[in-house]
Length: 191
Image (cartoon, rainbow, N blue to C red):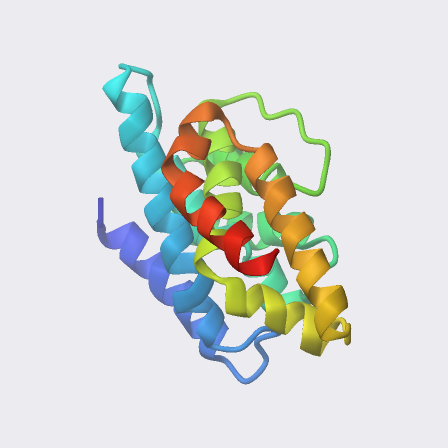
């Protein structure tokens, strides 16, 4: 579902990722945002097959903007900074106010490390897609642990195993079914 608004937001995220001020560099766009959006789309299709009502546009917008706070300001409280950035950007683009609220809730509740009460399918899908994208970015997870957190290789290996197990356990049965082959492969390689 690529409309003009989505294209604008996608380009906005890409520009922030490639900016010299980006906290994680340009590779995060292809390594995290793109797979995350694809997982969100797949989860939407899965829910729609069961005739569940999902606001696809809110999911897609939230997926593109979910980590924008992290890119611009860093990881700490990125769900809060990201929701503020999304709100401003969407208002500037004259997006409907009731949908802006939904997008903000998805961004505020996407973090797996927080105890979130996700009230809507859209919030759940965004959070799950974010968790699932970790299985496509093992090098990025290791880079964060080794370079940014300055851990040893063994500390990083253990941390990555724990992170992936936690991400997998946070998924719904639908999410687990979609990601299980990647989860099993990662566990086999890392143990």
